[in-house]
Length: 330
Image 1 (tube, rainbow, N blue to C red):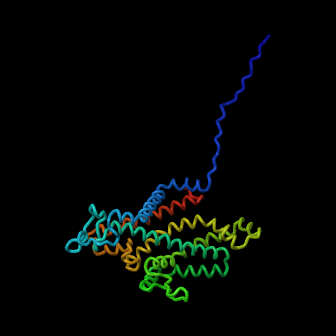
Image 2: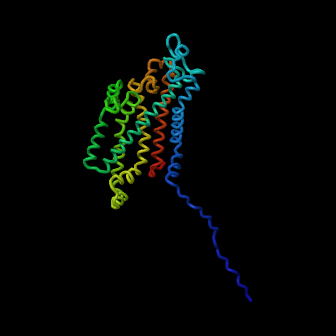
């Protein structure tokens, strides 16, 4: 009796175990893309350190034992009035008045960040409001707002800023009197005036960007769907259009901050910014103009901090733009 050999079936290689696909939330996807940009991460770290230094400036001054306006003219200037350089007690040296440059640089970070962030916040609010109105409604509203933007952008900004600061630098602007309030000044000289001037000339940049994006978003299908469901213009603008504008607003706001910081430094350099008792990097650079040939530290340290701050915000803005843009290859 013949035996039949059993059939051998080729089952192939063993199946590889299947791995589960884990979905990432928009926030996780953003952070994954952002942390790959080492320059942007470095910029974020430097900005965080600067903010920490600005917040703890009074504590640092107390530890060092030198206030931003304390005078040590006998100890830190020679018989010719020339300031002395860095040493164990004055890490960045002293200026021509005998003030500690290190402490004033730290307080200058506070001034620059306040002006840059507050002025940018005001400009973003105004620009976003006008940009959405112009882009969403179009027609006469768009024409009026767009021509206003063109007029502001065509102005010689620095000359107008100098004129406004010079006119309002003594008594302030928009003075008046009310029965219940009494005498008042809407815009006080000093830091408030500088913030007002910078915000006045900064909002058109944001408005133009928001307007352009709104013109594109208002033609999308989900806007038509909301309108067909009975949503009003206000709800569509602030519940449908505005959330889709958050990414470009954040990116361009980050890029606008260093511009405003440099604007404040330019005004202070010209003697039209914050008062001398309020430390400012621009004011320190202006004071160093007559002494930098033999007192290099007067221009080096505020200049380095100013460059680091503006560079860090620009790197952060570029990183945010690449991380928030899904079409970017970086």
